[in-house]
Amino acid sequence: MPRTTTLRRGAAISFIAIVLGGCGSNDVTPEQSAAPLNNNVTIASGSLVGNPADASGIVSFRGIPYAAAPVGNLRWKEPQAVQPWSGVRNATTFGAKCWAAAAMGGPIATANVSEDCLYLNVWSGAKTRGAKLPVMVWIHGGGFQFGTASDDSLDGTALAKKGVVLVTLNYRLGVFGHLSRPDLDAESNGHKSGMYGIEDQIAALTWVKNNIAAFGGDPANVTVFGESAGSHSVGLLMASPLATGLFQKAIGESGAFWESEHGEMKSYANAQTMGIALGTQFNADTLDKLRAVPALALENATNWTFATDPGLTNYSPIVDGYVLPENPYVRFMNGRQNDVPLLAGWNADEGLAFFNRALPNTSVQAYTDAASAEFGVANLASFLQLYPASSVAEAVQSAQVLIGDQVIKYQTWGWVTQQQKTGHSPVFVYHFEQTSAYNPIATHSTDVAYVFGNFPAKGAVTASSQDMSVSNAMQSYWTNFARTGNPNGAGLPQWPQYAGAGSQTMRLGAVIQAGPEEGTARFQFLDRFRVNGLISVSQQN
Image 1: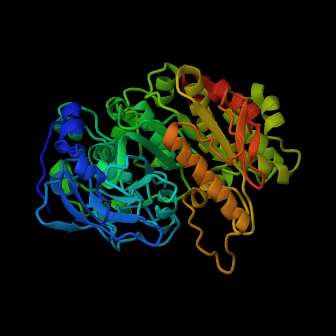
Image 2: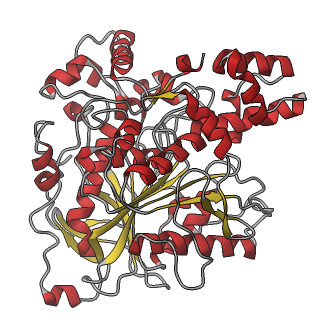
Image 3: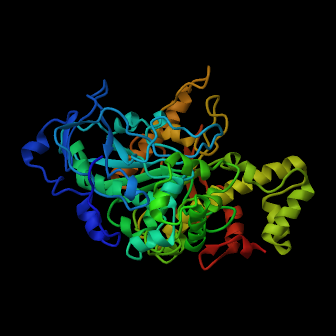
């Protein structure tokens, strides 16, 4: 395992500018700039050999370490520098996956899984090393509990063919990414613990800034984008001063501030209570003892399933006072965010994936009783106008719509409306509603296949020409936005700039055209319960 350089967590400027950056790795001579790009690249930490250009001219590099392995005494520490290597490092295969929950049931995966997982991957179609193509950095979803950048669905070839350099990355998940304890704070010179996974993302963006020119990318034109927890990450990065200057544009697909049906994101105090309890659970009264607990034992002890809200029940992002100085909505509300052009939206049926967390709905009475308890008797009539329950079937449907709003849609709407109000950069909003035999329901995460253009067969069902047409349009919109900050371009239906609540958004489906914002009245109802930027279940009674 490579040696690392240890820095104080508070040395944010030197950490961002030096530790993961290299010295002038983006400075290339005119001769180097004009040289053809191939699968042999030298970056700040050493030389790489990747996969040769495919038939479409895309070269790819996989398993590039962007930070030191967070193992041993680096477990639960901010990401550290990679020790430069000698010789040529093989970058043709993916690095190990981070430890992750078995969210779909079954045993926790252990194959090609390691705490040594801080790797990223690059796809580039640049013809020369000095091409300065726009860069798109993808953050995968998974509730901050599962997922990996090496999933086949995230192959970056199709997007790279649109004229961008595409980067995907792993980051620490669950207990490895978000444990918070007083003794972790103490060894970090007083900075509060619990946001290692987000710090990994910041480290990867720093790596991009300092190394992506070697792959034909433009370090001054970086778009960070992601879906679900990846989209929440983008919102948190826009709210974090530690990420300032590391990206110039942002795209969020279904998520923003890590709020949920249980209210605002977890507090530092609650996270500390959970962290202390973990030590007690393992009879580990010191960090040395807790760091000695095998990774699989920790993952088993903290395994998560879709039955609960991971923001409430598991180790996930918190308002730590360091990476996030304050609640992210509050930062946007007061104009303290990283102000960059934003493209964001949600899917037609976000609630299906979270339905087991919905209000009781086995009877109309059970539904209305639960709604009264959550939103207050005085608000019930208004609630039922928007989430009606004249029958059990309607109650079931409304419960599904509500949980989709609470977990995904409402906070994404809050993101775009606040950025439109307090920011000075353009905002573009979409509503994904594409359905077909291949994608029967436009539910949570089904947009990812269309953005990446990867459509593996589902049994005998394959993507239709219409699916591919929608995918091609979305890839063009996304890469146009990465290039210029505006998704519009030749041959595409005009996408209007967002003008605030209730204004025009882009409807992405069988017909691609601008249309009225979906869900405005519902979101405005939920917005009643936000006070001074904060929302909690207790405020709804």
